[in-house]
Image 1 (tube, helix red, strand yellow):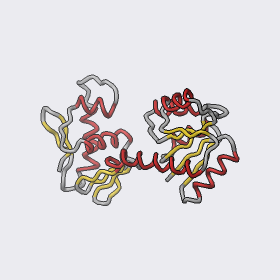
Image 2 (image 1 turned 60 degrees about the horizontal axis):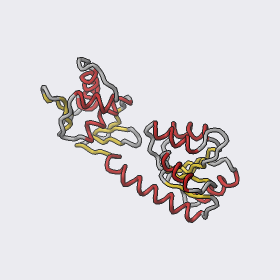
Image 3 (image 1 turned 90 degrees about the vertical axis):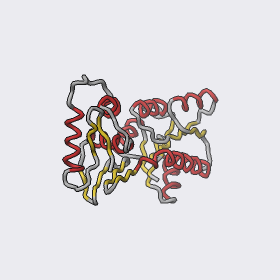
Image 4 (image 1 turned 45 degrees about the vertical axis):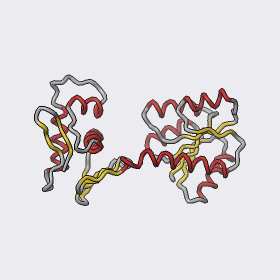
Length: 224
């Protein structure tokens, strides 16, 4: 697993890091909330171990910011504040689990493993999508076809991924606008047609089997 420990007590963060490193996990450490948010915006982690009481941005606020940004990395809060009110506040902020200090490493390890398993069960079905010789990896945001790497912009990837997870389902322009752009465009815009054309040039044109199809008067569909 790739873990991020956000803990301002150097001794404790060092102990936790050592324990997980000995289990061959890839462990990063942030000593404050600002550094944690920077790492989380630039890297993917499997689980975040997050102290509540940090010197700048506290753990509760970090949870709220991550969830507001639609970052659903599993978060395990670590804190000395063990009252029911504090636990409820932490979970309501978006945390997935809560462990009160002091704790045994064995329990911490078990909770991290449980969070990772749960997240894997949720994310795995759409993490890698294979359609014909096309492979889409939603975790690495990479696309290959017939073994060839295809470079897409962020919006092209989002459009392709949405078409793929709705394989053989006809999607109207309204659906694509709502789910890929997340804002309301004027319906006379040709942005969908433009981006479908971009995708076709990269995904379909160099290959014999075409995957992106126009359904006249209805929208678009990905099928073999």
